[in-house]
Length: 278
Image (cartoon, rainbow, N blue to C red):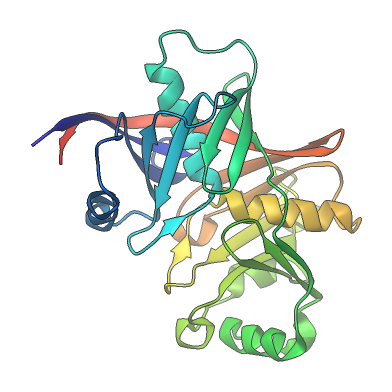
């Protein structure tokens, strides 16, 4: 059985084991779809990625992203974690941006000191969420419908729905009923109160997957939230979002709008490095 270079990294935290873990298999071109899916199921992480040779000259590498049950065209923390691993393996890494090829197309990644950041991909679906679905989400979050200040489709590969709650306290108090939310990806956000919460971040974010779990720190959700919240004037063009608090994590997602691009970034730390036999 072939052996591959392997790393497990922690994304969106300067403190190891306080962000979102990602498994990365390097040089996985000979693996079949079924083998990739089986390994992702075995790791049981929110995502596992496989680095392959690009199929277009504009890209430096290609990545395939798998949850334990399906392949995703794009996801945020796998993008940054995969770029971190690719850069650690590259013989001649580029001076400027890194270009990743994935199911959603080409994604640009830049380095900013210790942080990596990706350019948020275009939303596949945006706009208001139908009222019946908002009412279902309110029930699934265990909040009154009137508590939801706004809801928007922010689908950038994963079909996220963004929900704005009145404050960070409301976000932290949510106890989701996944039997009601089943099949729906919901991300919630609420603003920090400087007096009660400090000024380390502007928003608290939580992500509830369509498979009945809470994700520790979520790049694709934060990218979609940024496009929505900045575009609607709710958020400034530069801010920090906190995520993972309820799960004992300390995720920090840095958002910056530069020109026409929204960059979503964070730090990445390698926790495990070695080989895997598949």
